Each structure stands twice: as C-alpha cells, then as structure tokens.
Length: 56
Image 1: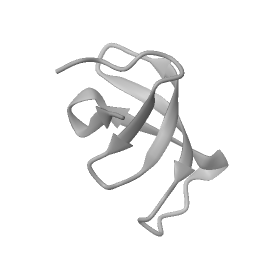
Image 2 (image 1 turned 135 degrees about the horizontal axis):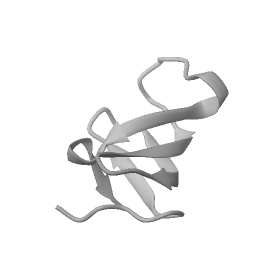
Image 3 (image 1 turned 90 degrees about the vertical axis):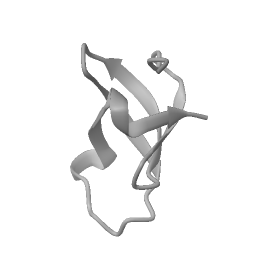
Image 4 (image 1 turned 45 degrees about the vertical axis):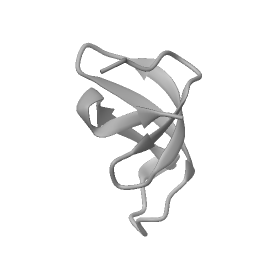
C-alpha cells in the first residue's frame, strides 16, 4: 500500500474524494471535494486511515 502525500487526491472506501492536507503515521486529513455519503463533515474535513483510501 502506497501512502498519500500532501496535495494528492484520494478516494475513501465510502466514495469521499478529497485533497490530502496532512499525513500522519496511520492516517491522512483531507479537504473534501465530493461527498456522496450524505454525512455532514465539520469544515468539510475528515481523517481517513491509510487502509481506507486509494490515491487517484
């Protein structure tokens, strides 16, 4: 599994697409661009574990 870098675009397993803003040991913080889940994320930001996204 390849870890994302800052400014990479990723897609979560739930279908959320976003731009990586921070990279941590086991996760990334993304700025959400597209959210098909219907879940409202505060400030359009969420944290995703490295196991739960792919770089696009």
